Amino acid sequence: MDIAVLGGTGNLGYGLAARMAAAGHRVFIGSRDAQRAQAAAAALNELTSTQNLIGRTNARAIEQAEIVIVAVPAAAQAETLKAVAAAVGQRVVVDATVSLNPKDVTSTLPPEEGSCALRARALLPEGSRVVAAFHTLSGKLLADLSKEVSADALVCGDHADAKGTVSVLCESMGMKAIDVGPLSRSSTLEQLTAMIIGLNKRYRRAHVGVHFTGL
Image: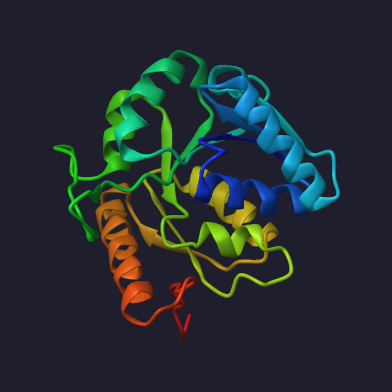
């Protein structure tokens, strides 16, 4: 697949890009600063021993992509989506944004829409296929290609075909994808992220994840 990662220079975006490139996907690292994107792509090409990564501005990163992953800070989400909304078209948009409480990152401050993914749907053109995923994964673990990602990838959305596409992408990276329901469940995924941050702090860990048994 050809995938754009908006916010690919950040922790989660960088880790996702590393895993996807290592799995053979072509990844366009997006950033507001083209030079930062190009530097990240060069570092990731070296890390993955591939030439699967290309650095571009956010708008240009979308041009050849089938899937657009939004992994930017919550404060930059609306601005980023507004800037690329016209170019998104019918592409699958995966929102991994979490609106953490700046005063207590073990809790969230959701936007008025109820979650960042629901805000993404409101900001994108009508008919856009928005999926929420990747919230509960560790960016640092994803970027460490010597280790397996033992956590499940939780996926929610209102379009079965879009969720199926994202699930195939997750599984290509060695993770089990779990369909947890409609896009309205994205608020739960964001809260889980805050809970995981709290667990990492409490138990002095760095890579706490979510794994469901019995499925």
